Image (cartoon, rainbow, N blue to C red; front, side, top):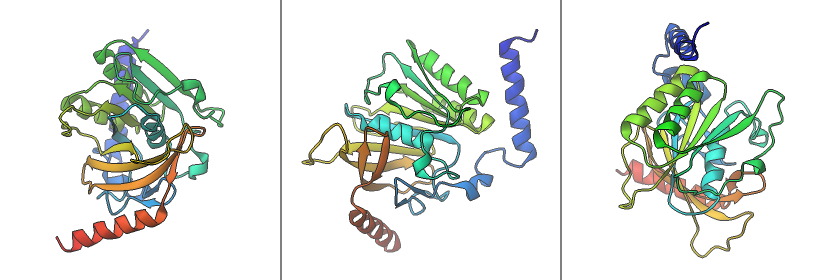
Length: 263
């Protein structure tokens, strides 16, 4: 009987061969027509991401620097969002959530509170591991298996090489990985191969509660990314995000375009 390791290797080789035969070795060129150009209810991402929006598969990061549920909600949202589905249908995609025991519990996520998968074939699972190496290995193997559409990895800081390996794992089976990594003490962004890098923080002075908190959502880096920031509302009951102040976001986008034109 073929060993599990050899079987997984064979699957990876076949998947890569199929992608190469279709002319999509990098995973990026033929995604252009499937980009997620709008998100969070009414935010256009085209002005901020050179690809035209969030790629349907690849590596993305949520930079965690505070102890609040918003980070977990953002990670879940990015794992769920789909160019072919309405935002009202979020929560139906298969997700595998991997948590390293030593990782700072930024989101305080309670797995049983995640939205129930409506599709019979969909599922969401959680794995808790002790070691950093085990967390990275598990994330890479789950992504390459093709059994889950998205993988969320909550872990301690990882290196540039690890981020590149995870992105390559996404290309093997068309998986999306969202890594929740804690911010560096210096405040500087560590090198990464992620397509997009996000941060979410409570709005100063805003009334905060367990449901409907107001936050600043920032796109702070990535490949071909122009940074942007928006005011959003988190909903802990549905694990969702939405625009909190459309007027402020429109003014922010106009200001960004003006600075770009006069640069």
